[in-house]
Amino acid sequence: MDNITQEFWNYHQKNKKIKPEQKQYNLQKDKTLETVIENWCIYREKIENRDPDTIGPQRRKIKQIFRELGIDIKKTTLEKFYNKYGKSKGITKLLNNYKNFHINRYNNKSIPLSEKLEWNSISNMITPLNPFFEKYLGLKVHISNPGKKRTYQPRTKLHEINKILDYIDDKWSLKIKLASNERKKIEYRKRWAVERISVSALKYLWTRGKAITEGYLTIADINHMKKHGRIPLHIRKRLNNPEVFQQPVVPDEFIQEWTLYEKYRDSNDYSPNAPAIVQINKQGKAITRKWLRGKVKDYRRELDLPEYITPHNIRRSMHTLCRAVTPNRMIAQVQLGDVSHKIADEHYNIPDTDMIKDELNKMYLCDSLPGETKTRIENSKNKPNENRGYA
Image (tube, rainbow, N blue to C red; front, side, top):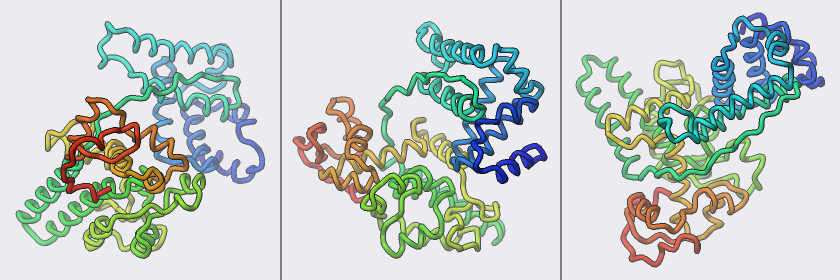
């Protein structure tokens, strides 16, 4: 932490009762925009307790907007930017023009899709503007977000996830076999173990949300799973849910996977708050979202799998599987950790269309799926589904 951000952090430690956003413009108007953005990120993490994995993308988006507007954030101070672009009204107009520029390009069918931002990308770019300008700096700058459009993405099939797991086993088994010495073999076994447990966590522990394979699964969570066969939800979800929805069932298969991984776990720290899944040669450091996305990207390239297969898509696919194969709405609601069954119905129930029915047949390897009235696939002929137990 440099001197400026350390000074900023010390100020907030001494003045926690003061709302920082009321004074941030006056306090930081002489600092460069780059420093102000970094201080905002510290504020989001240390004072608002935001997820660090959310803060990073927002930092990049704010900097990208300034860069595309032709503003040098390393040389331009906050006060200079504020006065040059017409204060709050001028900045609001500038940012609205930026938003409308991308929306107009999106609507222009003559521009190739590869040369313009998609609608949901535009929405994501606009998301951090109001927290930064309006709430943090206290400026009267409010940009309406166009909102995301709901889109149907093909779901990852269970056999594709199993194909990735088999690929990991085959790849590292061969490397271990051909290793020139014992030290190399130990290193390869650790690499194999962390890659396999990460994909297994995506497959089995989707009920807790994205945090499972991004460093927030702790040894305490693992011990709880071993003892009770259930996993506590992420803290943010737990605070919003009744107690009955806070303990989704954990498949025995994951406990078996963990026992296998534990032999090669690259850390001796087994304290309750220690990260469960750690990277090789990172001194017990938790795996990250970026690392996992990169690994899945490598897997699908090597196996020639569809590009839509991502960690998030795998998680959503497992949610859809649970909702589709569970005839009792309440069981799916509890297992997904949702307060309202409407959430499961809206996001994971599958419309009764020929296209998506065909997708279901591919995903679940069967024609018959019990479900609610919206999904009338139960009238089809039954076929065995050996993978149904994974849900």
